[in-house]
Image (tube, rainbow, N blue to C red; front, side, top):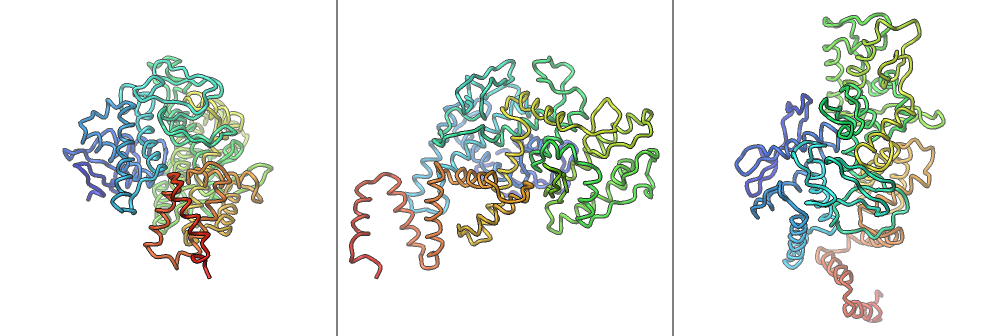
Length: 532
């Protein structure tokens, strides 16, 4: 059954057996066109977003509603979605603002699009077209997003220039994240290189997983490897940084041993591959139980079934131990699908291929237990942290995004902080006090591998609150915190009418209504109206 239907467009979730490029993708959003057929551009967009792990499937449903509204608007106005220009998006933004104003006039105070929510919708549409091009998701055979339009992109720092060659973006020194050129500007001063946004991270992961095609020139390939297995390994390196916050040295230390410990700590027993009827003996050099499972499809199926069963019981993460800075160990909460990628791609596909490729050349030295191994040399040592850093740095450069692998860890920390804040704020009855902030700070420090709450950890929370609330600076954050706590402390004494009055007062003051402010000052200072 459709989740939502509007003007002939409908959203439904894919069934549990739905696959995208051979990989199960249950609950993937599927949008039907007005004629009842699947709308292929968005099916491919969300499918490729799943493939490259741009966002979790649960987050795609929100984007699906936004894109459905966008395509509904285009359909209602007889606009071809492939012929969109800057003015089209400007007109849609005006349409949303008008709907917002009408909602206020009509007294409907339930579904009002704030400025930030409208900007979020614009970002989702821009990201869709930004990733549609032939160099990324391949949904369109032409480039709509470029420096000269028809959808004009802009980087956040104007200190240096963009170069566009053959539909490929190259960034000169100092360039920042891309954005729509006509997006509303933030007045917040950026004092350091910004964390990559969702669209930038998606481009980096897309670059890492896309091997060079045989007919591509050096300029078109942007340095990508030709071997698909190398691309799969490099993409998984990026996923560990994006989804687990792994530092380069932690990716270097990730091993079949630590993956086995993670399963054991989750009360998941690794099947004995040698007891399976389809087991193909790899030789005496391969000994770890997870390595042995690479030679038994039945054994792999048995382990994946155990992980799926645990997930059905409500466990969404598998905590994997990694050795971090200073040799200190931390447990990283990896989402189930990320841990499955480590098993199925990292160990059973790429690592196995490397071990098999060198089977006849192995001496008596012990094999490396690292999940990430180099190609072309005997697997006695894993990828070095320097090589890992170079892989990610090359991906940023090739994808046209400023930064390095460490900025992916910053992205992960920001996303983790946002999730922790949402959970803690709700559990605290939506009361904004020091208790909820302390809980977020403690959990974030633990996830990042910090012994105590540092200035860095605090800065992630402050930036997340400033960003999500659309504030200008920390002073605005402090004032809003006091206002929110005042409302929370008195909410049981306030009626629905009181809350509506508060919202009207805020709107009037925000509109710089000087006369209203003066009347309010007189009223608040009148001794007859003071609280006894």
